[in-house]
Image (cartoon, helix red, strand yellow):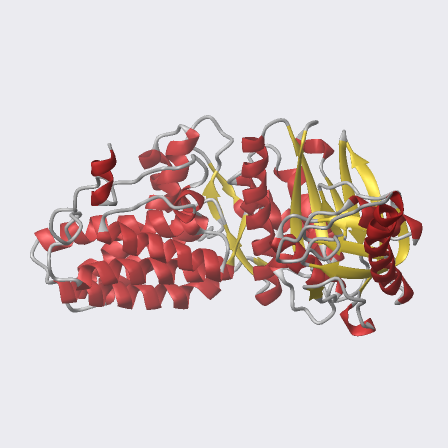
Length: 491
């Protein structure tokens, strides 16, 4: 399996950002992890680890003489059984998603896996951002939580703003507007330029004065027309000419320049504006509205804040502080997973114990179920159960304790009927504790989809009855010399 790694972030993120996976079987698993990212937004590592374990154990089954169809059938039966058992393992449900304290305790586990040590602070930050814009209708949109990264200070200086925050300064003299009416232009804020070049012959000083006056009057008329519609904030996607800036200051209009088209589109969606391609006066339907727009300072960085308190369309921005860009990128990924976990909870409030407790209980029950199955599929069903051990095993190895000891302890405790007991990663010796009391909880939907997608990926690889080669198809590549063969004559 050849992986070219452009950065060194989380595995799923690395694959998302273009790691070139050559091996077709690995590609299938990567696709399953992408689907988990789209469907759930978290649990991508679970899919990779679990699908890998399933394939590894399938190899053992094939070596002892089972046919591929029997392995596939056993895996699919076991997957259905896992989905039947999963609702029994639910240990609690989220009661009130508008309570910041409760939400932050539920998001902690998701963030802990990426930012161990900072999870309490970050969970509270994300909970504040999510709860503040959670609409009455219950349709939560992940895109409504933005992250603005500002270098400097430390993580604990991060804060939440209601509205949009841009790392920009205002162009003109006006730095604050309350009850903003916003005109958005995707073109430069400048006068019209003729497409053909022309030569103007000026003989007297009076002609020179009149020549520039015509351009000034035209610009004045354009800005006056925009101001007369009631617009007091102009957002432009291009450069701002000095003359246009002068007239914007004259009519007391705040001017903000956003270089990113993506930011411009997001702002239009937030404030309800239409981006105009030419400098024409906007009609009332094309203008956006916002409670206030003002220039502020975070650390030594100037930011423009569009404050917006409207229900069902509000946006929250988490302003992240950190000493390095890499650190802030990692925290941004943790925030992304936290926000996705909140969205999952709005769809289904059920929670299952984390820390390997759910996996061991599933393994125990599916093994017992496998014993009752008469056909050859029972071997595949038992191996499917064994694959669940990969998760607590990985947790134990990452914590630096002996995996086999931990797994045998977990099985012993679960055999007594304590289904919420998982691995205690903070103990320096192999130890277990109650995950519900410790507050280490996973979402029910996240587990449901992860098991389904990992099984589908493993079964798809098994279904291909040729040997999957890691060699790309096709003949030799053409020589990558000069593109134009005529060029060598000019040398």
